[in-house]
Image (cartoon, rainbow, N blue to C red; front, side, top):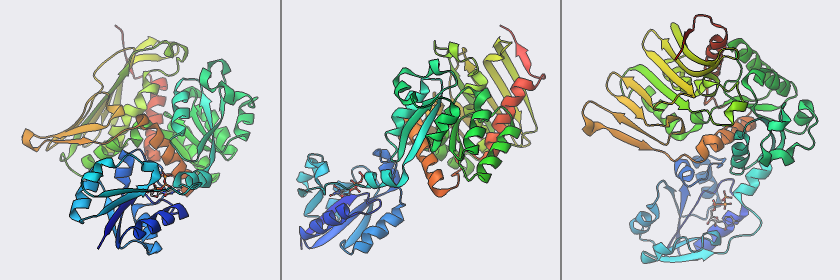
Length: 445
Ligand code: CTP
């Protein structure tokens, strides 16, 4: 009996897949199909897959062509499978020509002509298709535009800023049709906002009133009350309002949160997060992106996710570089909870070790600097023999995962809540207090 094996994602099964499977089967007597697991797809850069593993397996099964279906979960599994199942022929489409020569050592490798004119990416792109507008002043918009290329269905349509002279050079071609903010909104389905934080509220409100979905860089607003109001408006207008904070969408960070919540280090007693950077020439022009607005939300995220938002008291200690506009070069905040304590240190113009440490009653989690771009962390115990290291691939600093999550939320008509609304609100409240609360301690060098 000649045994054949082939692998693929088989998302939104199409006739290109079916033709491939038919010809693969015809190469022998028994066909095994390996369907790739979500995590494995992510590590090889496929982040857009729309259907779950089960749905994709069911679709392959329903063709009736496969004699057996297995799941492909790790790099190098093909060799294991070929040996384990005593495979004679390995086959895939011609888009992979040259990539699997190393398998010749174990079985025959056959590339089948790929069917022209159809692909899962193409179908996803057509099904989804959101015209995205970018709003803001910083070069970061260039990164978002570049990351959209990895997200099937998200197309940059227009770019706008209240201060048009600050629109990044690479994006000026997208500005021609936007006379004002309303004109910009008229041309798009969804907007990514990274305007000055004190203008977020107005920009979001107008976008939602026009029925546009919003992905807004943290902080969403400078007060929890405004935050609440906007979430209600989004829900009334059947729009998505999501907070953009790339760390929240990084796989390593979300696994870390799950492990900590699952009790791997016992009860969580303390969360300490530091995020700092020096002021580059760009920041000189953007005084509202001070330490607390630029870094505060990211630093507060693990505290609120792990200890909750119901803290009993907080103390803000700040070092102001410019007291008129309240530009803080450094701010430290201590949050006291009934069951633990959280502290953040954020700086724009003051540099420190950007690590995250979560301390528990049986061990601690250590994320080395820069923890906010994390692909790696360790769980450490009293006895180092028990220590564990975790690595999860992070592409594009997490921006592309954030965009995929935004698109999924739009498709499903509901937020996927990487960042809970309560947390968005708590972050906005703290930042509001930073500006209004006279009880902050001000230090001078
Ligand atoms: N395939 C094919 N013809 C197509 C599309 C896919 O022969 N038009 C083959 C691939 O070469 C592979 C198998 O089907 O052997 C599974 O491919 P998969 O990557 O799941 O499908 P794509 O449509 O290529 O997916 P994507 O657009 O996400 O890359």
